[in-house]
Image (tube, rainbow, N blue to C red; front, side, top):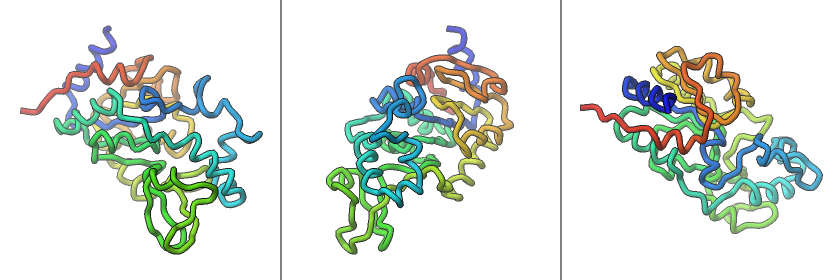
Length: 245
């Protein structure tokens, strides 16, 4: 496949690769995406859309419904890194990958071993008491019911994920912007690029090559040097990691 050969040539010539990923990166791990025909946003929950439930205003007004949805649809304890996650870890070990900027909250990049990671929408693996600041993991959250309460102070334990209406962590965003602006190869994969501020982040890239890997068209396609329509895990798995001598 000529497109995969072009991708390999770009990877071979790059010294500062940055990967910008969305939900399509994790579908091969059994985690549904959001906006595809089979995605989470195609189904209502108790007559409500996911966009409504996953908003900061809904969280404060109807926390019990929020947590019911959160546990049922956003927590996937059995999910494991797929070929895309593993290949990114190989690229980081080879010192070719300078950073992963991910919209995903599933934590699979970190489980795969990557440390140059910017989780701009947070992670389900950190749940913080809103009163005392104690932190609990996903297993603890799954063991609760109703509104989760801190066993130490009784405060509500809120997932460290960015809800609609909330701003991402400024330091995470600054780091992500820095890596994108300094990259010589930006790989944009598994994202529709429709949610701000993530949608505009690729505009910070002024390096040599941009590659888009996605099943559907994205707003970045016109600026990309290479567009591959396909499965993110399969495309990433095809990359041979070049090691620096």
